[in-house]
Image (tube, rainbow, N blue to C red; front, side, top):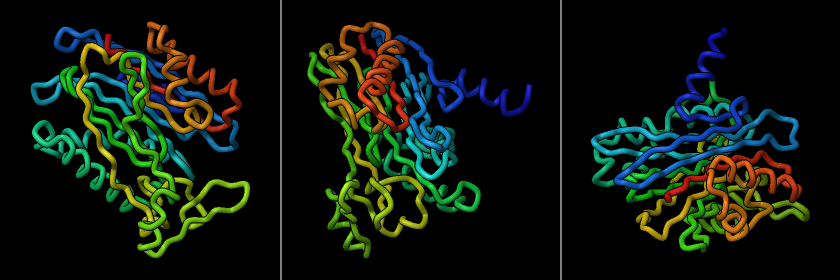
Amino acid sequence: MTGREILHKMKVKAGFGSSTSNTGKGKTKMYGKRISHGYHLVKGQTFHAMEDYVVAQFKHARDSELGLFAIFDGHLGHDVPDYLQSHLFDTILKQQPNFLTDTDGAIRKAYEITDSMILNKANKLGKGGSTAVTAILIDGLKLVVANVGDSRAVLCKDGLAKQLSVDHEPNKERKCIEMKGGFVSNLPGDVPRVDGQLAVARAFGDRSLKVHLSSVPDVKDVIIDDKTEFLVLASDGLWKVMSNQEVVDAIRDIEEPQVAAKHLTEEALKRKSKDDISCIVVKFQ
């Protein structure tokens, strides 16, 4: 067995998914709640390698039990999302001593530190970048979601979809981009792009665009109560073809989260999504 194969097996066991591991699941109990997760990834109809990576795992840290979930959707290469998969949560948990007392601030600082590290390693990681949506479940009671870009987090509560993340579209942040000296293109037949290149206004990496591009995340906290049913994290390959409520309605009656995640990716393919599609479903019941 090669070193790469050994590393791949270790990542799968730890709850990491990539282009070579397209499905997985796990479960735990937190404060009497049965919590389970499943994920599924499908490569899009593109000529480049799979650029989506996921994290889905439970772990003990600082006297708390945590659920760590993330989707990293890369562009112009897979090195940046691969780096995020291996480093972002470690930066949050190990380098931020105030994580439990100021979770939002710790996450924002960790995003800043991680982006700086990626930019400093541009010679090795390349000129590409990645969007990110992360969700940290603390003791089964509090959920903290952060994101840059257009990967999305949606919560199902009492059958209704609630978006927890913010889609960072260039048109929405045009003023900020222009104040930094950049511009947003709006060519016929194309989506708005920062400096005519990137279709999101916030991302990790992208050294050539960073002067006009933000990596500051939006962060939102929610309490997990008895009416909270499940959480869906997914890359834009899903959201381009399904609304938040359509996603919730499609899997509400599917008990197994891994089956639910796979069902969503298959439905996105039926609806002619051509992008990479990655999806995590976390069930709280």
